[in-house]
Length: 231
Image (cartoon, rainbow, N blue to C red):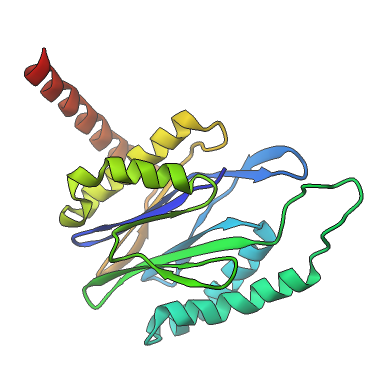
């Protein structure tokens, strides 16, 4: 199970992901990075066929400046991703003897950034459609997306769009940990990226540990409040 999610904060955008890749054809899982730079000012993540996402990563690395400078970032992303998808769809062999259920070439791509004082979160679906989610403030892709959306809804009363990136990182990490508890194929290490007017910053292991400390303080404060009100 894969999950890549993004949330809007008052001063930027936070992306998070797990690191578990599931190979259905071989019946195995292994760790891999799912969050990638999109130039210095944005980031992206993907879910689905690794062959497609590898080509997308190469393409984005070569064309990040053109994408981020385009008047319509969604169209620019679409123009880069669609030829890759069409190539893999056209060359995909559906019936391989002895490998039924081995997967498909479909993939989801989600990118996010901050431009001209405004957030953007854009998804390209396997059919090439463009989805804009900055106005909603939260979005997730991957097989774990439904649970992530539910977890995001349970955090909605914290009004993430009105809070800082520091809080956004803690909220995203809490969602990822909740998914880790409910699914054996979502697991650590988790990746976090915060994006603001100064650009995208992928958090180091040490920085994620600092976020973990914020989460523990948050959880302890919740328990204290519950005890004070109800005990």
